[in-house]
Image 1 (tube, rainbow, N blue to C red):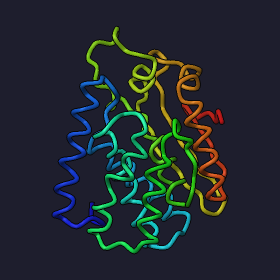
Image 2 (cartoon, rainbow, N blue to C red):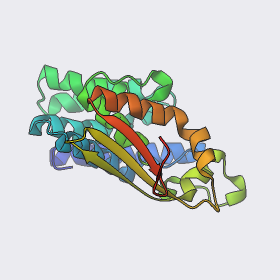
Image 3 (spheres, helix red, strand yellow):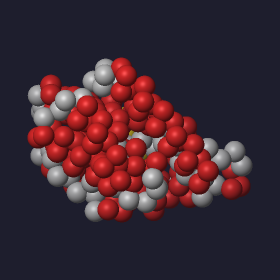
Length: 219
């Protein structure tokens, strides 16, 4: 993370690794350095391609990278817990009070179980970036027979990518699903709430949100 000083990044990498270990014990999906990096990158992509200023893009990348740190405390309400946890790190980065507030709002509101409100552009971008990371790599169970529906849907996804069209004010999540493993309908059953959050988040950014699965627009 080029936007985070090296010594802090080393510490945060340890905490993110511990999140991965804790959630592994629960049998939850992967929330590792991989997920943190993808959400950081996609958050910056959204803000950058919508022509937000460089500093907003940097803050979005920080928020995306740190958004799941609250899993150190508990899987549930991890967004709110994470906002408290990251405050000392943000202060050590010498962010202004306004910048700290923007990042805390984004981290504290990214969970659908806690409302999932887009309180600022960074928050909206983090929410879309986070919900877009549906991937086979996130499934840690080895026995397919033990898969829960969310495991099966993630395992079926072969590729995801975001497209941001600043001119048309449109954000598109593209997904390729192996329908021999999971159907498109099952994806909707599991992720409908997340997709609705993405739609509201896109509206906060003055954009529309589209979901394209296997080259067909479904939302």
